[in-house]
Image (cartoon, rainbow, N blue to C red):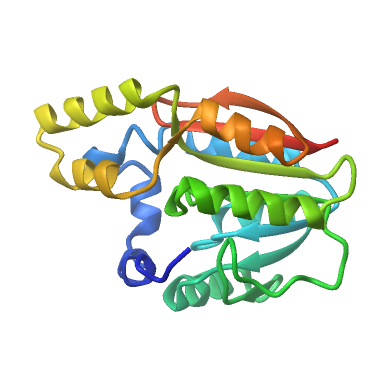
Length: 213
């Protein structure tokens, strides 16, 4: 994962929570059932959790409330500052991303992320899952919530709908981020020794639960 999105993350830091609450009409559907999505990720997690792209700490807060031990990884300095304030330094947050991070000394049981894995190309997604497979023991989990599509046609139709609605920012997002498909993600997980299931929560977001075999 390159640094091409870091400036965007810093700019988005102070308005991110208003996006997830549905205040922005262009992204309202992407964040529909947001609390249910976070709760689902928490419910599927166990033990010591490594969270990538913690953002402003919304998922992290719920993981801590559930009694889980969390290590947070976040590339944006602004996001890290907001998360530290929100979480009152109850979790260790380090600079890094999906591919470049300091591996915790403590054994990791679950790796989680929400609304972030699409910043990686499909090749980088495969590289990341391969790396996580080496970190996790049998029964360990990867639980990701992210925008993915059933196939490329579904992605194209979503872009077309956004164009007709005049959602210019959403269109740019859909055309520049590395949104993938369920068949590709299924193959990536299976090829790296995981059994994966997918649960849909809105038009965009699916929760992926991959268990190391």
